[in-house]
Image 1: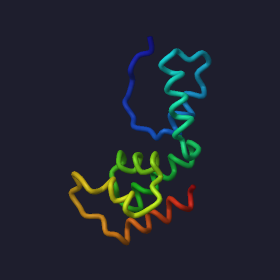
Image 2 (image 1 turned 45 degrees about the horizontal axis):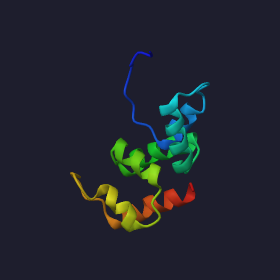
Image 3 (image 1 turned 120 degrees about the vertical axis):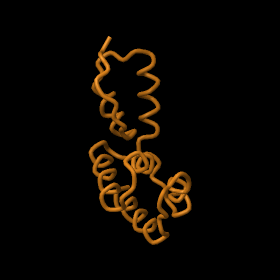
Image 4 (image 1 turned 90 degrees about the vertical axis):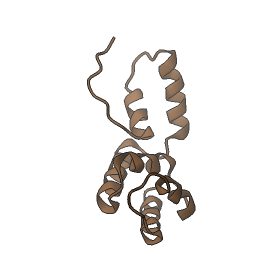
Length: 107
């Protein structure tokens, strides 16, 4: 059994890229592969870059950026959901619109 080394949050596309490397997946991995194939909306490199851009450019938390990239919302209202609870700072509608433009460029 592999030793647990480190916990890192990753996007669904990044998980898909890792699971694609598994030679003989077990039953749990097969189900997970089916899930990530169904819900992956970008390639892994583009997803990783998009997360980093959201963190740097909009100063959102890394885990929030991952969730945004996983879901790729199409409206400000959908995007606002990710930042409406537990936030210490308010994200203005203008910022959300700019985030949405960035997401739209990467679809």
